[in-house]
Amino acid sequence: MSTPRTVLVTGGNRGIGFAIAEEFVRQGHRVAVTARSGAGPDGTLTVQADVTDSASVDAAFTAIEAELGPVEVVVANAGITRDTLLMRMSDEDFETVIDTNLTGSFRVVKRASKGMLKARYGRIVLISSVVGLYGGPGQANYSASKAGLVGFARSITRELGARGITANVVAPGFIETDMTAELPEATQADYKKSIPAGRFATPTEVAKVVAWIASDDAGYISGAVIPVDGGLGMGH
Ligand code: NDP
Image 1 (tube, rainbow, N blue to C red):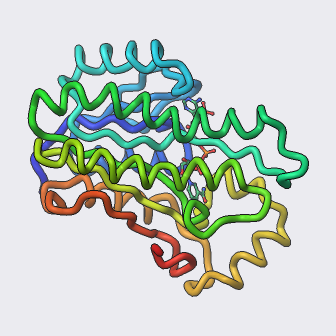
Image 2: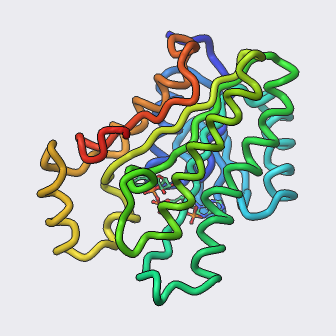
């Protein structure tokens, strides 16, 4: 097992974030989650935070540091979709998705990097999507936000790699959560046909990969995009 670490997962009250937090708890780490509503799984510390607000992110870190110590592993998972065709996409649809998924990850990682630099140790994991590199009709805002995370992780790797800090991107394909339940049945059936594995995945299948890339064993991997998509995008 990896050394027990202090872990923060944003958006850990449901979906993929909840499963990631559960997996870290199962592996014996000290786990905090941020939530805007609800709570993380049993055994986690839940703190309120909205990733679109730097002050709220800062307050969440301060509370976690007081209870569990400096954050050593951060998983920027909180994210939203606002799907619509380009011609119908408002500035607000575009900006809200970028502000949550990309700038929100920046706010969280920037705050986490303070403690990581001091400790000369850190694991940064950004939850992107297959759509970031594969593209998706009606998802110009979402795919741009998720592709942006790749450049972000690679720049962090070049900037902080010598300080014992890794930054990687996990790119899930279609995972059974509230986000995919919103897709029309016909769209879900079409996607299943194009996934070599022929099925969607469970949140736990993503969580196991996230926990591994954040483990001591994965210390020499940084700036990578790790697909968990049943072969749909194959990483690019
Ligand atoms: P859900 O919609 O089930 O959960 C989204 C989570 O993000 C919730 O915890 C939500 O909190 C939180 N969140 C959203 N906006 C904010 C905000 N402004 N501040 C803080 N928290 C926020 O999504 P999934 O679990 O499906 O997705 C998790 C991540 O995985 C996302 O980044 C998503 O893009 C990515 N992903 C998902 C895929 C899928 O198939 N499901 C595929 C590829 C990537 P609240 O409950 O308060 O709204």
